[in-house]
Figure 1 (cartoon, one colour):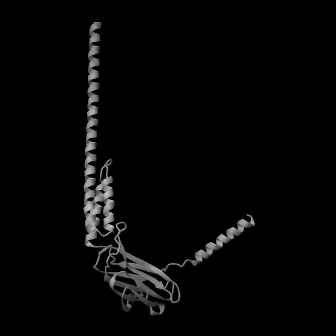
Figure 2 (cartoon, helix red, strand yellow):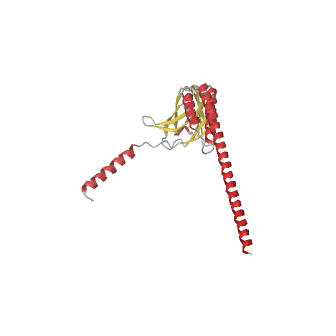
Length: 265
């Protein structure tokens, strides 16, 4: 290997080494959850428990930070020792909190309970469905870096947005279940329009357009089924005609053979 190629390889390895050394490892704390909803209605009261263990795998002293998009929030942080005995309990109000943890406190497990109201939806999206951050927990070392431990989110909706989503889903199902050969272009276009109305917050329009799309898909499916039945009847009719021709030809051949035999006699 010449010196130029060697120097380029050395430079590349140096860059990779620096890049890897600059990556901050994620917190090694283990998490378990309870009560996080898959979907929630705007204005509903929700709560969840987030359990943290392996608290000091990275640092012997650090700050637990929590953030949420819930409204009217209360955080409750409870610590336990290895035997499961409660060591301390503290509550915080607001969409964020900071709680100090130290190895000297003998706390080996921390349970964070977050309770609040599902917020209003600013932007509606059909796919993926709009979601809010229920909780994000981070580990911050004093004077050092902040590493995200984990983050949990949930879909949310209003009653009107749910009705619109269900109507769009029904229209899409009608399109998907249409038989091969069905012309569902009109239905597909209407579904796209319904989704646009949904994302604009015009849920009544979305329901109406989705209903039109479902009807269009059903009509296309019916036409395709009739066409298939007609083709099947034509096919059977053609087979029957061919069969009659074959039978008639065979009969004609048989009679002609009989006449030839009689003449030879």
